[in-house]
Image (tube, rainbow, N blue to C red; front, side, top):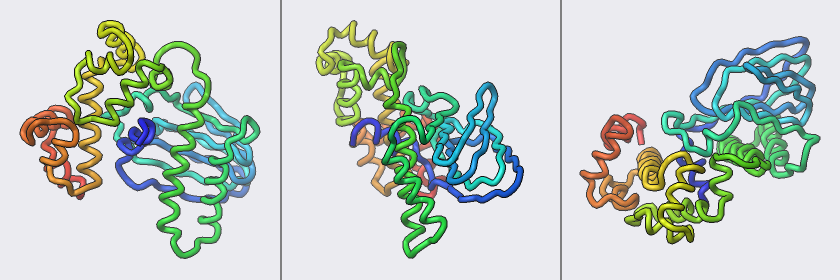
Length: 275
């Protein structure tokens, strides 16, 4: 998997939720803070979305993405709206998500996003006239929608500064991040990663920390344990196998590291989530 796919898979902690609503006449909806991400797509009509310091006028075909699940208000008049939410592990938010603004507005008239609009159309069809297999199709389409909404922001020009978009786009740091994600079990050192990046050890450490927001080996440990949590949620792999996959020499060392990061033992974490 590429790094972007890795991150999305690790962030997700539950099934997405969605609904199609048709509102006639003046209407207003207040949405509370949500521990995850949310979206709205206007299929027909218009409405306005407001949150502290921001406002977006939405028309048919427009999509909005709220990566941090911020509280917001929707106002409109005769609107058909596709809305949904994703449960994300906000306690260990990835730098990719942290770099997103509170609101990403994707107007239908600005720039071609054929994949995004195709998924929206398919979701609308599934809600309007459900066919056999809809219960399987809708979650898959919602996963695609999340990917395409995040891509829209990732592919926009972000200029200078720091952040995950800059880190992955940076030739040196990007190579090192991909190497860690491709081979999390390897006993990486800063010198090893610097060699992959094609920089001196000191220059690499400074550049990585500046762009990613944490030192290379701190990020590596964070990613290993985030991957472990995802495996505990989604598989019945033995703890020893998970420990080996993410680069821990023993199940005991893995359990201690996991407990420090998550505040609970890996076995209890799995049990509480019903994996």
